[in-house]
Structures are given as structure tokens and as C-alpha cells.
Image (cartoon, rainbow, N blue to C red; front, top):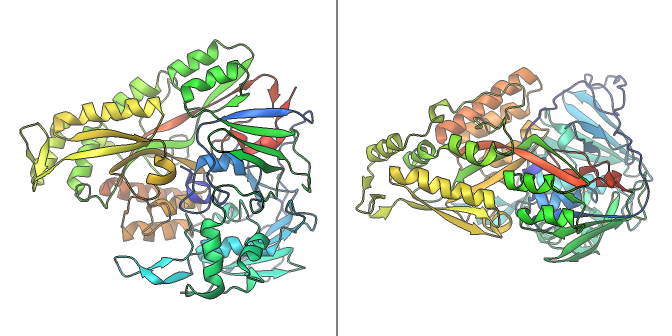
Length: 589
């Protein structure tokens, strides 16, 4: 899964004084000072040819910002298709997209005002300009303002009209203004937002939405508090939620290096160079995403030439297979992705905090790391934080009370909460056996082994954990909250704020139904604080609250593997966006 706004944060980029390609902040009305422009590394290469990437999961939607479609599989395709003012490079730094942007300028910090100047030459593949309409649509759809006038949640709150995975940051912008023939966009914030550079990535063509909905000008669609779900706003929301699902060449336009030219479900997706691209073209003629869902088969596909680039989850057997193939380069890094299990608070059994605590007490995370992760990554350790990773400044292991598995302690926790041991060795309460399913995507040999270890580790505590694999778990069951316990990973971004939608009350990626107002308040504080030291402190406070609630159990930080034929150059690791983040720079001999 890919956290909204790009994901659970793994590096904070919080400078309030400079913007790559932009200027320093000043008091309102002052004159900004010029800052040096940060540039994306220029990697020389040969033009032409095709590279095939082994895709483990399949593309599902062009709108990856919706809560139904926040998948890494989509990100890996859209990295080179959708435009945005910044590119997150291999060092997890925001770099100005100088092909598309003249500048991004912080005009003032109180109130916070950010100005975007888009080059007049920047266009979608049909020749229409990339402009203010596209920025406005991103804000309108993800600010959380428009609500349904019909549906209400159980707590009486109206549902958001747009099914946005995250509203973080956009919900702090009070207005988006257009000028200079729509090439200048000015955003004004109600409160300071430290991670503003993470907004407006992966823009979608507003003119397509206007054409399909009959809305003449999306920038005239009101976005004020409690906008009722009627009229034009309803038309816009319905298309934004559903109109970009699956693949349709007439609506899934490119505003970047490559366009989606073909998609055959279960087989492959093809990107071709965008003939209307306004900047330096991509080197390759085509990039093919070939479905190879079984990671264990990817080294063989690499060896026989079916694919030239792979990025499966590593294990000892897979690494041994790679080592036997000549002409292949590979590297393993500890990236921004972490494995965890989520407890569904809507499940009556898991609504009992004692049950969640007992599971955390009986799951032996050290055994999992020793048996499944260290053989391929000897430096791997158990993860003790959900907001900061072990290779980040400020990381603290806040889960010391759960450092060592103790099934007897877990049994005592359950007994104190009124659970009693049944004749079959499984705890019961009120006629309900303590039996829960562990949902996960299949096939995935390592996760299958994890689920088997969970079951063996917790059985002595009287807890029955049943492996429940499903090939559509991440894409369908997880977003719908149809699980007991979910075993999956969040892939991170450079922004701390992007964790908000995962744990916030009503957050677009809060699939488990966690309802903790204290966390919402702490995230508000985190997202309006620019001081790095203070932000790290708040991040650790958030994690401690998550440990206290036992909302999730972090397991380990992923070792990320990329491997490719030595005939392919410029393949660069990126923990946030995946290996295809710079596929426009790939070159084949």
C-alpha cells in the first residue's frame, strides 16, 4: 500500500526558508530572497529501445489519490505519466520539476502563501495546457470540505463527497487563485503547513473532467465549508471518484514523459514516449510492465530475458537465484517501507484492547526477523516506531514493553479481561472463540511464513490466528475494511504529515476504524510545526499513543531489492516512489 500524499513519512523535509527553484519566506508583503535552484541529476543515456519491468501487482486506476486506489502498483506506473511541481529524487529530496515549472515561491509565512508558476509550454498529451484548473481540482477533491447531503456515519457526521485517501495539507488551504492566463497559481493557508512541497504531485487533467461532466469551469465550483453534495460539485466528485478507475486512453492522459498506450489485464501494461512532452524526452521508446505476481519467479524471468528490471521483496532463496545469473546487477537497501499488522477496531473481538495487547505480547517479532529477514539482510532489526524509521534522526523504540514475546503474559492479560481457556485450548468469552483471520495479499511466500509463525507463537496463549490469503487483499479487501487482522506494509514519503490519513479520525487510509481524538490533535500540531526538533518530539508522542492503543504492531523495516540487467543503465533506488521513479532516464545498450 502507498500512503496518501505519497505515504507514511520516512524523512521530514521541513525547511521554511527555501524552496528548490523558489525563494525564501518573508513576512506578508515583503520581498522574498532568491534561493539556489536544486536540479535533478542529469544522467546521460542512449535514446531508443524497450525495457520490461516485472510487476508484482497490477495497475488499477489513474486516480491514485482516492482511498480505493492507493497502491504502489499504480505509483510505479504513474511516476512517469502524471506531472507535478516537484520530483522526489533517490535521496528523498524534493527537486523542482524544471521542465514544467518556472518557480515555486513562498511569498509569506504568516499567512503562509505559496505561488506556483507553470511554464506556458507545459501541456497534456492532447495539447491542452497544464494550468491552474488542474491545481484547483487537486485542492477541491482533497480538501475534505464538500460533504454528502444524504449519507451520515454512525456518529452523525456527513460523509465526504470525494473519496480522498488524504486531505492533509489541502485542508489547510483556504483558497486557490488563478492569474497570468492560469499559469500562476497562488495558494493561501489558514494555518502553516510544513510539508507543502508534498502537495499537488500527480496532477490529473481537469479539462477531461470538465468535458465528461459538462462542468464548464471547475475553478468556479465552490469549495467552502459544508459544500452540499448537489449540482456541479456532485458531478465533479462522481467523476473524480470513479471516472479514472481501470484504464481508458481517452481520460488517462499523460502530462509527463510517457503515456499509457496499452493495458491487457493479467498480462502487461505499456508506456510509450509522450510525443507532446514539453521537456527533455525520456530515453526509452517503451517501458513494459509485465505481470509476474510470484516474486519467486522474477529472477528466472530476469535470467531468460523476459524482463530487465525487478524489485521483489528479498529473501535468501531469491538472492541466491540472482547470484547465479550472469550479467545482472543488484542492491539491497533499507528503505522507507515497513511491515506491520493492523487490528480492525470494527471487529467486536478486536475492539477489546486486551485482545490487541495479548496478540502483541505473543507475537515473537525477534523470531520473525531472525528467520525471515536476516538471512537476506543481516543488519535487520525489530522496528519499534511507526512514524520514524530506524535510519531516521529522532527514531526511538517506543515499544520496549513488547520487546520480548511472552505467551504466558498474553494469557494472563486475556484472563484478567474475562477470557477463559476452552477445552480446545482456545480462549472464549461470551460464547465467542478467540479465533481471528490474518488477511494478506497472495502469492507472497514470506508473508505466508509470517502468518504461520503468528499462529504457532500465539497458540500457547489461547489465541487462534488463521492465515487468510487473497490476491485482491491490498486492492479491495483492505480499503473496504473487510478483515480481522491485516498484514501489509506502508511505503513512505519524505513528509511526516502523510501519516495523518492513516491514523486520523475518519482518515482516508484509516481502514481499521481507529477513533482517537488525541491523535488527531497531535497530527494537527505536527503539521503546523516547522521546527525539526519539535516535529520529531511530536512524532514520537504520536507513536507512544499508538503503542498505548495497540492500534498496530510494527514488525520490521523492509530491505528493498532492485536488480537489473547490466545492459540497462540509470536504474536508481528510491525508497518512496519505487524503482520506476526515474524510468524516463533509463537507457538500454
